Amino acid sequence: AQSVTQLDSHVSVSEGTPVLLRCNYSSSYSPSLFWYVQHPNKGLQLLLKYTSAATLVKGINGFEAEFKKSETSFHLTKPSAHMSDAAEYFCVVSLNFGNEKLTFGTGTRLTIIP
Amino acid sequence: DGGITQSPKYLFRKEGQNVTLSCEQNLNHDAMYWYRQDPGQGLRLIYYSQIVNDFQKGDIAEGYSVSREKKESFPLTVTSAQKNPTAFYLCASSMRLSPFEQYFGPGTRLTVT
Image: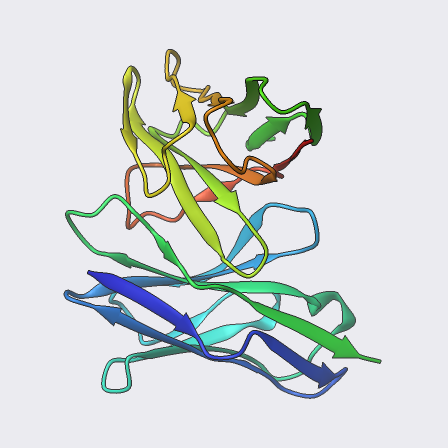
């Protein structure tokens, strides 16, 4: 079984300040983890993925995430927020074998304050 | 450009009518998926297919049907048996089944009154 919890439904930060979106996962086996971004009324775009290689994963648009097995976390960070980062972010978990499904978190809405 | 197209972007139907949502991909992906998105609930899997002429139920398949006659096409029919069909529907594809990342279409917003 697998599950994912996004700890904040809404995060607001000022433009130019750091972003932290928190995600905890539960998985019976070694997981793959993803972060997706969704702008209003659009499809989802992959930001980054972890698949058991380096624990610090760099993605597009300056985002990165660190896989911490001991804390079962995969938090998303960015050093400096931009207005274009305003969107909904989804943390997603999948098993590395024998499972056809991705399990999505409920999403975190990121608001950027000018 | 490779990608996934969904049509139409907005769809309105009267209660009791079946409606079919289109999904086409030119990524040469084997696997395709349909998700439903409701506010505050993330994405829920309706159906998925890993190969032509084969598909499997996801978590919320009741009231929906699919077909996979061609590799590039995976249409979803929302039937009159679906009790609460108004939602945002997303189609996705991946090279194989998980853990490969999925690529998403722009979505279709269905409103049933």
